[in-house]
Image (cartoon, rainbow, N blue to C red; front, side):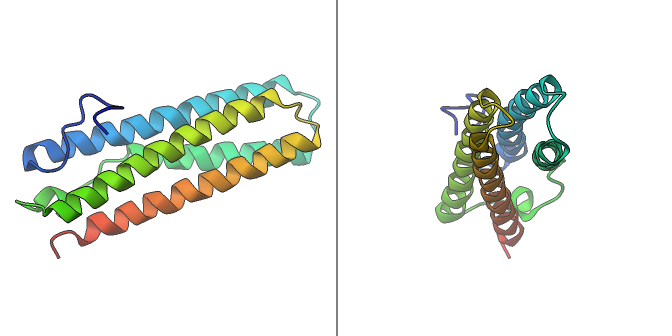
Length: 155
């Protein structure tokens, strides 16, 4: 993670956990906000787009916004922050999920860019949007897995 977010100090030391968690969330959110911007521009540029395609694009943008909001919310008082010590397995599992979230967020950004380059009325746009939505669902599931892991640390 530190390679992608130099301020990230990891979860090994309790005094670094909140800041590292916040930095990770901000990094994922930045990727998704860029995706939202790209898709919104395409949607606004296609004023003659049929209503069903507009609704699909708006649904994708809403889902991305929900994830950005979730990433931006305070992590609260989780076992991750309360634990005095974490074993290496817990730290490795959290960082692995963090990296998966970063990889998936970046893949969404790249897919959003490719989608925005397609003509919105073409069948290839439909395929790109379907693939994008599947990537968003994968990201959401990884986010939920991370939450489940963090809620069980030290219990």
